Image (cartoon, rainbow, N blue to C red):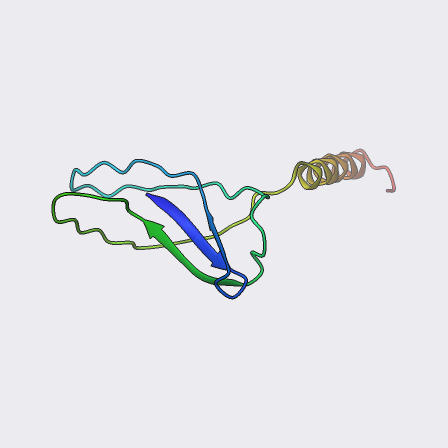
Length: 99
């Protein structure tokens, strides 16, 4: 399975790295990482899943498609610094310091 996006008034076709989906009648969760190299993602005209070719009848159900961004390393660094600072302030207050 390979997800794709059409953007720029359907003028741009972009796809992600595909994954194999076992045909075993079970439910499976697939997670596709969206790299920062995708362009014009602020307005997506169409998204879909390319299931490739198959010789037999195929039926699949999609329950949920969720898009979320992965925080950049700088954002994670700032979050970590904020958490460390919050911990320091809490310890200082417990020790009776006026912070």
